[in-house]
Length: 636
Ligand SMILES: Cc1cc2nc3c(=O)[nH]c(=O)nc-3n(C[C@H](O)[C@H](O)[C@H](O)COP(=O)(O)OP(=O)(O)OC[C@H]3O[C@@H](n4cnc5c(N)ncnc54)[C@H](O)[C@@H]3O)c2cc1C
Image 1 (spheres, protein in one colour):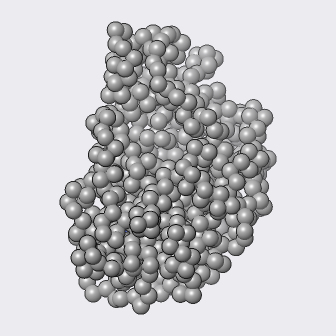
Image 2 (cartoon, rainbow, N blue to C red; image 1 turned 180 degrees about the horizontal axis):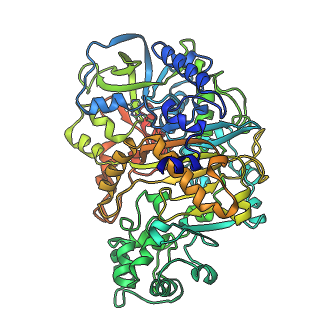
Image 3 (cartoon, protein in one colour; image 1 turned 60 degrees about the vertical axis):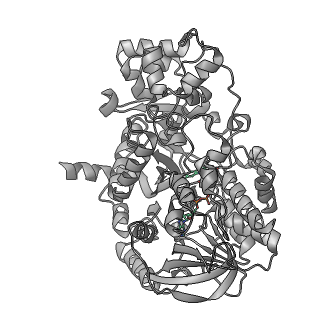
């Protein structure tokens, strides 16, 4: 029975073998034999320098990506007490060594060259097979064309609000953000009458039903009356939902505006709805996962105040003050390269390592093919060494007057050590206490406070998007689904890259999953979600993708077995930086007492960057923290 169902979903198609290949670069339709032999060759080359292999091109890998197998094992070994005695000493030494090749690490290298001189010798280590960290590029080669997607960091959010350093960096890299007004086709989907929709699944709501005409995210959560009438919930729940949306009631009478604010900050939206608005419990099912994309947890762990700020219903009669238009609302959400902010990472690498990323403009970087063999070249001042996990960073001598830092890293199963005058740790905060056990206890404790948010960005290549057109939808919110929803790719054409703007063309769908565990405190949800992610095989994702897409789009004629042509699951067990959650944190904590501020203090010649260092999961923060870390070194 199960086998029959799998076959109907297309689980027996070639693509399923990607679980087995797990990240091997294959094209749809390529024979398993060809794919396997490529993989075997890459594995064989891994002992030396896989990046020098002309076939080495991580963006084209499909299957399980993000924190792919091979990237995390050494760090987990370090956590579990593994040691790497007798590392071999590298011959080269550097002015700066950066641990972490994400945007923060790359920006650190960029700023260091700017302030310490363009001849500075820099080594960047990263444990992944590609640079960029969360800024990850996914490519799909269809029989007709190349499709480019983002596997992590999606867009530049409100770039005109960036610090002058972060905005200046974008400009120096050649990014003119205003050009996105031309490159992002804001009228495409609207012009075709495509709307947002909600998919009510039978496991949660008793019946599968897709209802167009509803917004999620922070752009409003209100159902128009004709949609409200069809939502598969009891009449009592429907009446409460209507009341929640339409009536203007002060649910906290007698409290001043300030008291209301404090109350709402310390009350989850779920509790607010149940205890103050007194809605039927079935209403909760509709809103539970609405904030997943931003918070990676549901409304049980997001404050009512945050939901008020995101324009969720239930506050119209509360006479609240203090909501400012968020910068995201003030600026349209259009600052998007087809590979997300991977283009920013690629532009940084172009600037740091001459000859690695051909071209000269923000347009040509989109279709440019990176020469990975060039990244770690002894002839070039800046070297990026992929597939290399740092396991130890310590001063050569007393941290107070040492002249060098020595970093041990593991690459291809072997330990190496390398020295530099300065070190920037642009990796995750919680790794640092393991890397640097000699740091003060208070600082290590503060660094360990950060629990990154796990989430999954999945790209699905589909044969065409006619089913979306037929259904009149471009984005589907699925409150009870395995995936929180599915969205047609952003319609961006830039340089030689043209978005597949005709529904008969193949395109990419973006699916979000956040594996949280409602009911637990937020950090516990993140830890449990991370465990789930690391123990979920690709096959489970694939089956859920096929099942959910098939059911959501059935009315448009979508057939998963026929229409799903490629899948890349970017799992990020250590995703967004931990942002303090007022439900579980002390209010009004002075800035100097925030754990990220205590944790990011310079320790001798070791400096700390990464978006964790400011507790905000944004690209501009990653850049700002790289800038701060480098100024600690170069401004004195
Ligand atoms: C799915 C997702 C979507 C996002 N979307 C957006 C968005 O749309 N806009 C936005 O502004 N921000 C977004 N963010 C936030 C994102 O975190 C930042 O934008 C930014 O990319 C973070 O860069 P970083 O360099 O600080 O960290 P990272 O990108 O995490 O880079 C750190 C690197 O260090 C590596 N590392 C860790 N330990 C070691 C070690 N011991 N040795 C070697 N290397 C190590 C890591 O593996 C990683 O590659 C998103 C984040 C995620 C996860």
